[in-house]
Length: 162
Image (cartoon, rainbow, N blue to C red; front, side):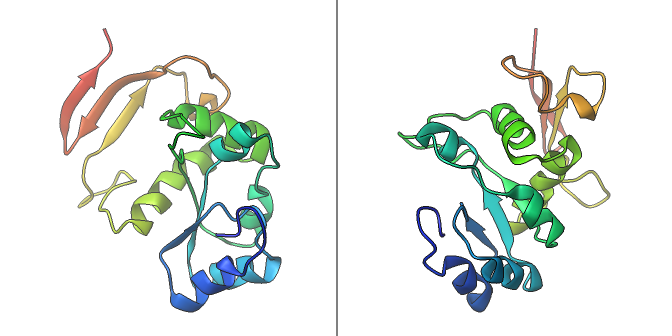
């Protein structure tokens, strides 16, 4: 919605009670405020402006408006990355997000998809990614290498680095 031009996509997402709206590069402040009021998740796709050499969404403004953010890759022939670690780096460096906001964006993404995942708490699917980093603050700042050491899906280890 509102990726290339402001076409009223953010307003429409709020009006329809959508779970999420993607891109939002050209969304109006009014549309973003309406989305925040209706708890519509703003799914930002920083790989797209990186690939197109265009401006990045103003994530900081959206966060200050109280808009729940999700991050995603927008994997397509024009934006060919599957790496959320790269997306987090773009979010930190180009969209002024903090590492903890990148992490919390996963819970918002799960919410927007009606998934029982995205956080560590009782009753939530045990889907976890464990990284070889000193602490969460390194997410987004240490890029260009795979930091993942273990992937757990539904409480079972499905991948481990050697």
